[in-house]
Image (tube, rainbow, N blue to C red; front, side, top):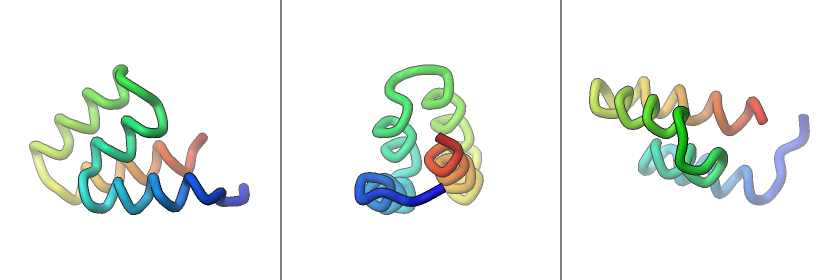
Length: 57
């Protein structure tokens, strides 16, 4: 899978604020709520989930 220019911006957003990357990739939905919960539990799990969501699609 090739990375596009928008994926790079999404990954940068995901490192700074993990829910931002998920919001840009999937919109407002279940994945965003999961990521917000993971980010509240710990910053690193939120980043891991965000990167997974961005690279999966």
